[in-house]
Image 1 (cartoon, rainbow, N blue to C red):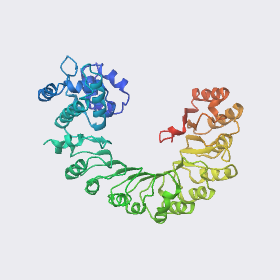
Image 2: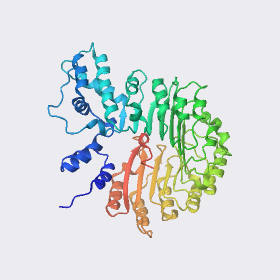
Image 3: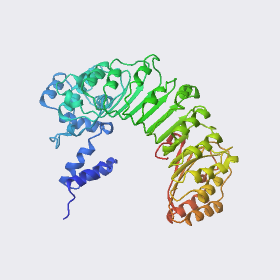
Image 4: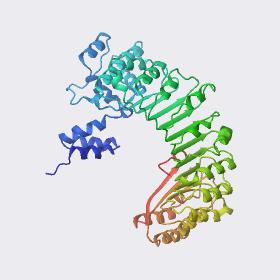
Length: 483
């Protein structure tokens, strides 16, 4: 019987994200079980209390004796563990350890709420000790709690340096234990992704950790509240190795430091109000030669500043995304897209009823366009105008239309009109099946999916292969998977 090579199975299992499918792989044969079990256990963020029950059974006798001396009795599987499960973990979530250990202890018949907090700390410490000693090299560390002392447990062991030295991702709050930041800055120089949520307090050591990074490529800043005199000094220390920058903020954030990030390929800006973009003026003449993706959500800078930025950086853009705010549309901006962004593959923008000619010009100028997200309803284009323009004027690369319903007022598209549109698409040579996404909410009454006769037409052309896939989603789910 033909057997897939181990390397092939590793490649296949790497792309299986469904736990049910992985579990089925465990049951095929001994080889499949041996390989797939590592993927089943690699991400602690998916661990259940059952997983932690198994980990407790894997604790060394020294740890079990500590639990016994503290009268912590856990019912564990009677069979000896088949694998060294802790060694498979690549993503360690400190918060999840605490949550699941608390849940596990509370479900024990002999649990005492009087000692519960101490028991959680003791058992968690032994679990952390197990991971530090068994994981050859951790790849991702997640910790957002600032109240617990678990960070100390991770860094007190002699094996900690080897455990964390190859860390590639850190997801944390700005106010976690400063000792952890300090120790990471001593031997973690190759973090490629930093995802930091900034709160009112910024721990000592975070600045040093950022400064020593030699290969930082991705930086996500979630900013809800911060001491204004500290945050600017941190983000201005970002290295020029950065290729992706994602800023989400409620307060003003200085943007001038972006000018030094010459290797930046992806820039995502999501602010609460246009006042957060006051510093965008410092970017209007900046040239970012590698920039390919620009996403601006929620609030926006002034039109003239954004247009000037596109004049300097639009030629290399492959994705330009405007979204999440109702009514933001300016024809001068769309004309700037036509003039300065000829190589776009994905676009999201607002086009009003009287500007249909602009959409035609977009397709004429951006001939590589594969996907477009068009706002519909009220003063914006109707479904019918959007569909007909896409069918008649998009080029052969185009294959995805996203209709984003911003307002409840929407003229109905009747089934005979819809079928005529799909017939026209089917006659395109070469035929490229269309992906259709509708983004709406419960209150939008006249969208395609609200009428059975329209859905009948859509399903008919899905069966015939003219429509590759059809998806309806809400505003809250409007993410990159839709785009």
